[in-house]
Length: 250
Image (cartoon, rainbow, N blue to C red; front, top):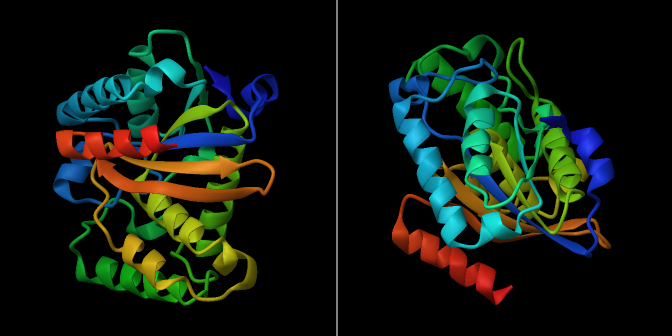
């Protein structure tokens, strides 16, 4: 496996656009127990491994694996293991890279605690509301703030887009939600500290199931992202077909 920076020098996109398939990692024991993982390194459980295999099969049926230039993931085990399973199912050898920019939110002192703990829920709700209003300076004790999260996430997506015309990314729920919010708001909240759009706020509060898939187009000339689909459940036949319809129309 090569680091993302090294690979991006070898595989710069030859076209003006890159289609990014952004996958959340498979399930872990802590997901099942509703514990906050953040940047703690928790591996997939058996359910998560099956989800990753099913995702690889869905991406193969969609024709994505046959066209992908690379599979890039967070360096945390649950994401990198999911990405390895997907890459291994490709009919040809893919570039495989990791980028810490795709890590989950660093929840600091909340990591390891229950998602249902009242204090944890209160702090997360307060930060979500502050970020949605454009105050990205708010953050988690001994963790990170919104500005750090969103800057590194979008930078990692731009770096991944340099790898070819079709790239698979495996990341984490919080990182994917806030990337979606930024993209749907034209990245204006990060650049100008203004509130997110109403649609972005809706996306932040939507469920992001394990191994769901979001499809985003990155335009190299305009340095901008355009979303095709958010949070499609690749374990669902109907949602796989919806992703295929979007892909075929592009």
